[in-house]
Length: 470
Image (cartoon, rainbow, N blue to C red):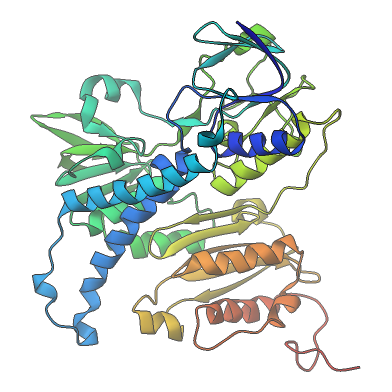
């Protein structure tokens, strides 16, 4: 059986669904091909179930400060981990159902629940033999957690990933979390707060990919006082009876299970990319233009979402899907300006990165830095969460904001304010003219801006925060 369409989209995740929406808007014929579980990585195994687990863990963890607030009876609180996991799956299923109801449930012959491979640059073949001839093709196949093959072979079900953690009916008494990036740090802290003996391991000497030395040391100090962080050495795993021996440098522990959070690899296997003469660039991803999402050397094939390995975050996948879908429907691709980099790790305190990384700016003499420790911030003290630091970066001449790195309570909200400022190319002077209420966490941002402005060369009036009337 052969079919002919304007656009073929491989992958029904966030990027693929956004590409599909653009095809529909342009009134183009399309097929959406996916042989896996529908409902997006975010809703099924990523953003949403992890945040449900983190919320439960945070609520339970708050009991430790109830005594100083005069709240009695804390000793009677107990947690049922089987009910926790049932709750996580229940809420997760609500999110998945919402995604399906607003996307693939509304498709008929446009949805092909099969895997597909390239036959030639314009032709795909599904695993039931159907051939699809498309004028343009969007690759949005997502990614898969990385698990060292020897671990998977030797230890089997005792190795978990974020793809199957939330399917566990019960949680182990002890767990090693290998990889202290975003996923590992979030889940490691949450599991510890649920009463599980957890150990965090990473061969890098940082957490959540933080490069700013002040933020890095603050985050490691604050979070490392909650549960062990073994950094700077690769994890070694071996059998120890019915348990696993986890080693990293001089550290060692016996655990029931290991959660692998060592990153994700692009889902490109099985696409038969060699049939179209496509070579992979460094990192195992095809070379492409991030402003058009067009593959290098092809004027009709686009790539979007986690499969690019570039910014594996939902809003980025959505934007890439929109760009790829829009351009797949055009005669000539359009280059789009990408939004500022913005990443949040939902640990406590939140770790947030906006704009340029410190690693990109370190050593430059044209960059001004400002910072504010969270310790004296009134709102943070009231919440019993006065730990962390905010670091801001701006051009020394004129004060245009370049980026920020922070480890702070409610940093998810502070990060949005900074990301919006970067998108509008605001200066530190512009931001200081914004209203800041009292007492709120945004006052910490205001204090960091005041510190930053002292290191910026630019116009200062008698009142930097207010404009005089003409």
